[in-house]
Length: 334
Image (spheres, rainbow, N blue to C red):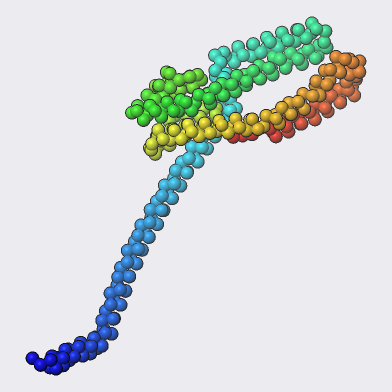
């Protein structure tokens, strides 16, 4: 075959292809754009479905979070009511909270006997009978309640020192496979006082027919502490909504230890202010006692004259206001 003829055939084929491409280019471009548009529309529909699913999931999570927050708020309100009732209890309730086994009648009889004894001692010392009556009243009414509050606060402090350790024992017991009831019985049997006695009351309440959450919530009546409130809320939420109880109790134990560290740090930082407040509050009484011991005639005017009584009354009011102000300045709630 002649090369010239072959070249002509090739060129004719190329020319025909170019003409065909030129004629069909617009249609092919339109089809390509159409395919791309259809693909984008499908992708947009898929993205819209994903966005809708994501929004629904976020809405469900928000709804669940709001439900948990409402439950926590309701539990906290109930616990606040219980705390207020427990904090404003009678002498009988405070005796139980302090771990004393005496009855209110015995408490009042002991206070009255102590006040009568102090009044007789002061009367035999030669003081004014009216002053002896006041001193006896303070010794018979004020000092017993002061001692009761001291014992109650000391028991609360011991409970806070041992409570995180008890929670750690419960966490290890639950992780080892024991149910919550057996973990509570373990603390009630082998724990340290006063945690052991409080958990023993909870176990006894369960034996009387109460649920675990209700039995743990009753601890606040005999140990009115915010930490016990946290514990009862954790148990109540776990009994209603489920979840990892061991992890929740471990977190609670860590929070209680951090609160204790923060409280100790605040007490250390405020110790200088407390010492200054005690010195300033006690200084007038110390000066008056020293003046009375060195120059009794000089200060006796305050006790023998009506104007001295007025001065003592006004001074007592202003001293009380100053002591209350200093007390509010150095007390911190954690």
